[in-house]
Each structure stands twice: as C-alpha cells, then as structure tokens.
Length: 383
Image 1 (cartoon, helix red, strand yellow):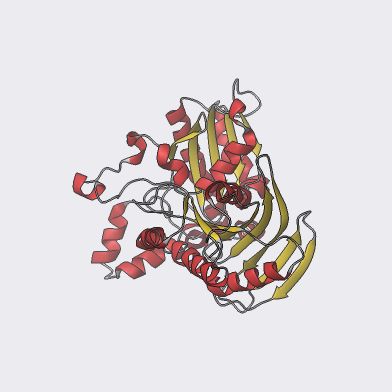
Image 2 (tube, rainbow, N blue to C red):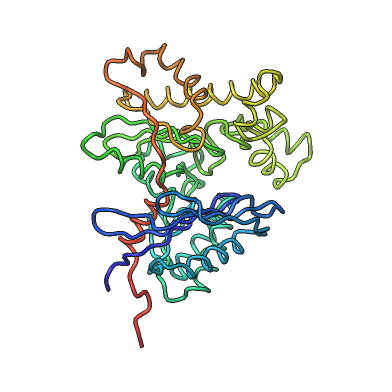
C-alpha cells in the first residue's frame, strides 16, 4: 500500500495538545494548518489555530476538560477545513517502556504495551493514549503511529543505559531510557549529518533534559527511567538523593502517590520559589523576591553541570544547541548557563572548536516524517 501524503501529528503534553497537518513527500514536510489546546482541565482552557504561514485564524475559550475532549475538538476542526484530509495520524508517546523501543504502527498488541508503560510517565502517557483511542474511534480507517520520545536513545551504550541496581531489577526493564527524543531527532535532522560531530542538545522547557550526541547518535542523556530525573525542571525535582524519598516515606508517613505528587508536581522551580513553575513569571519578580531569584540560579547551575558532564562523555563539545520554550526564548537563562562553561573553555567566542546556537524544536514535523515512513494508506484494505 502507498505511503500517506497527508499526515496529522498530535503532540500531547501534560496539560496541552498540539496538532499539525502536513503534506509530506520524500524531500519535505509542508505545514497546512496547526494549533493547540492549552490549560486542559481548567475553565480558562483555550483552543487556537494558525495557517501554515503562522497567521492566527481561529481562537476560542473552549473549556476542554481533558485530552480526549481536546482530541475530539481538533479532529472535528480538521475535518471541516478546505485542506486535504489526513491519511494517517502520528502520536507523540513519551515512554514506550521495555517492549516498545522504536516508532511503530499501533495495533492492539502495541497499545497494550504502551498501556503497561503508562506508570513510567504518568503525566504524559495516559493522556496520549486517550488521544489515540479517540482518534481510532473517530477515524477508524486511518493508520495510527506511535512516535516515541525514548526511541532516539536506544543507541546509548551500556555504560549510560544501565542503572546501578541489582540485575534482577534491570532484567525487568529498569534502566535509563531518556526522553525528548523526538525533539533531539528534529535538531539532528535540521543540522544535517555532514555537520554532526560532538553535539550537546539542551532541551529546556517545563521539562528539561541534556543529551550527548556523537555523529548523530545518542550516547548519554540526563533523564533516566522516567522524565522526572536529570536537571531541575518546572515542577519536577530532577535527580535527588534517594534518601529524601525514604525520609518522606518513613518519617513523614507519606504514601507513594503523595511522594510522586511532590516529585512531579510540587518541586523544581515551583517548589524552590513558592510562586510558579513558569520561568517568565520568576523573571518578573526575581528583583524583589529572593526565592524566585534562587530558583533561576539553581536551574541554571543544574543545567550547566549536566552540560559539563556531557562534555566529559563526548571528550569535548563541537556544538551546543539550546531548544525548547526556555532554551529558545530566554536569553538571560542561556547567558547564565554559558557563563561557567565559557570560563571552563568549553564554549564561547574564544573556544577553539565549539560554539552555541539556538534552534527551534520541530517535534510535530518529525512526527509527520515518521508517520509517513511507517504508516500505510488506506490502513484498512477495501472490502
């Protein structure tokens, strides 16, 4: 069967759902229309749409209760437009678990494997799978493709992948998986294979990770078994002394769910500042609020340390790429991070071999490429 030429990419975040409709061929992916449902579950949730040229064409206060309702709204909107109808749908899935290691066509078996992986990324996978189910129900004749954030990191060597745990636990798939892989893939694709060498990608947003890439392949990354590990994030701790968790369990009497809430939703920038997980808000008040200023400093120090660690893994850095919401738009944070690295001679105008650039992460376009490669049209042969 032929490959689909019109692909809908659905990118589920923890409280948002982005979409992009693409015309894809062997050489390019052209955006036809895109948009996002934000602040899902809140009364102020919004749904907005832009043309392929980025012009705003539609916006509403939608009051969408969850990702499933947002998916239904997006699919209805796409179906009503004058653009070509999608022939396949690609879904960003944060965690594929131990059995689902590469981008793959979704069938009942794959869906079951992804459901088993859901506890490893509870802020993302259950919501993304609800989007898959809505898409299957409303467009049953289309191929649905799972594009995994973990797939890019399957090339990591054992020295990076294996966690220092008993072998019986490692045999169950408890290992370093790595995340933001679709974003990393898009950066590698944009740079081009001929220019790749020792690359560090700093994906900085509400979730943040640092990845070491050598000749286009991931060889180490800051996140681990789950997206909660690594650098300090918007509301996540990042790496933390395991003894803290024992203390909360034994001395404070907290349940596993309560500890998970602290680690995933109440820590990071939010926990340090006591104000917000949003870096923009912290900048607004940092001059008069020491806790907000400290949160920014700790975030930058955490990222700087991880970049230094990846430089050691790579034996030097040829290029450092900042991407993600903070990485692309926050020049002050980038400068604070790079200050210590310049002093160490790793990057900056006086570095002999390395430099720093800002690049836009093209996750949705990357999903469209994979979906065209893997998907088929029609997905269900005619009777």
